[in-house]
Length: 136
Image (tube, rainbow, N blue to C red; front, side, top):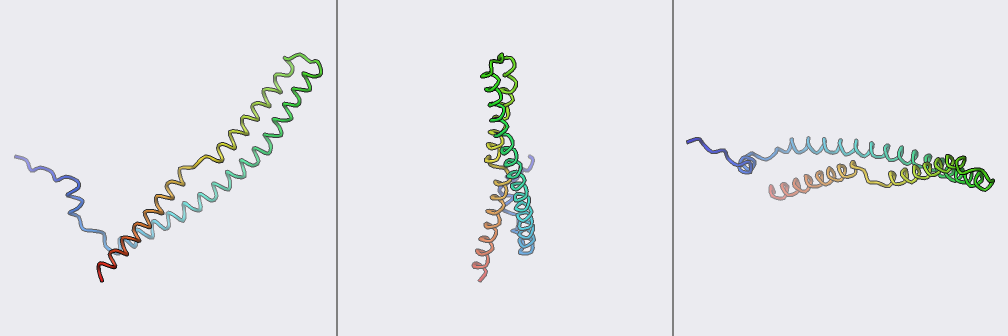
């Protein structure tokens, strides 16, 4: 008969806990990662805000201008075939501006990772506080 493998849970529980040096090193690594993620998030948010603002500032007036051009052509007695290009371009500019604004307000995946790592760091601090109380 072959010896049965211990379940993963039993093997994990049998392992000794991390040493205080390992916990301190892990905390430093998590803090460095959090700092890096915060800086990256700040720069990405700043670039996203600038690009979105510039895009909408250019695209919304362009959509209005092209729409007015199409109306002017139609009001001047021109055939519809001559006015469809500015009208279509205006609609495309308007749609692009709306997509940019929607993209700006959409949540990013890094926010979730940053929050998970922050909670993980808090959990480690609570665990160390409990160990400190139990060791007294």
